[in-house]
Image (cartoon, rainbow, N blue to C red; front, side, top):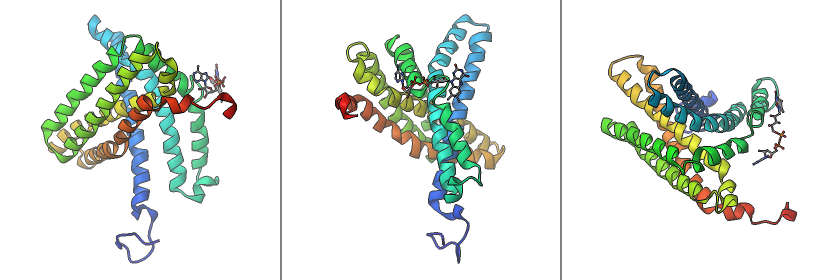
Length: 272
Ligand SMILES: Cc1cc2nc3c(=O)[nH]c(=O)nc-3n(C[C@H](O)[C@H](O)[C@H](O)COP(=O)(O)OP(=O)(O)OC[C@H]3O[C@@H](n4cnc5c(N)ncnc54)[C@H](O)[C@@H]3O)c2cc1C
């Protein structure tokens, strides 16, 4: 069909439709965010084992351990989102077998099940990575995110300022949830574990978004130096997309976790 803005005289390729671009940008943003999170954690793992300074090794180990359930749990859940959109972009051709997209979607499903299901990763995040130290590690990460927000705001560009705003809202939601989890895991375990996977999704979303924000800062510097401008501009645009379309989910997840436990557990077992 013809593009909605009349930019082609007749029917053209589907990439002219804004919603097709939205799907492709979503796939791109999740992929880049999750990949960046895994790379940063891998670097921390190396530093945790090989850095000459013992305190730096310890800090990197703590950082790495917090990230592990996020990388396994969040990235694999998002691989389902990405591969599902891959099918959707192709329409009926995606659902039947010619394109190979449906095979990627089916293959991605096992990633959320083996090597510890998503819920088991979430149990790790709640228990060992958050409650055990009263939320200290999580809150220290929030302080690092806040420093990135300040760096973004200082550059003053529209993309960086917009990213800083979304990151701040997501960080504040994260801190609320960390307080809820750390404060209630012992007293009201069912309330906390009713929101354990949403907490994992919230944290993964924020931490991957934080890496997108850091990438945005580097890309802006490279654009200013004239280095690989088209690639860097695409990084900035993808980070901006992540901010406006993916980080924006975080405050809603906060509400589900902090306010929504009762509806998860209210129905009696014989209602299922
Ligand atoms: C293709 C494939 C390859 C595999 N390869 C290997 C392998 O090489 N080595 C190996 O050891 N295993 C392997 N597995 C097994 C895999 O690790 C398990 O299937 C996985 O750990 C889930 O366990 P389960 O199937 O018993 O499901 P269950 O543990 O019964 O889980 C069912 C559901 O209940 C939820 N659930 C269970 N317990 C909890 C809890 N405490 N809190 C919250 N939710 C919970 C789960 O999240 C899940 O949604 C493989 C499985 C498949 C399908």
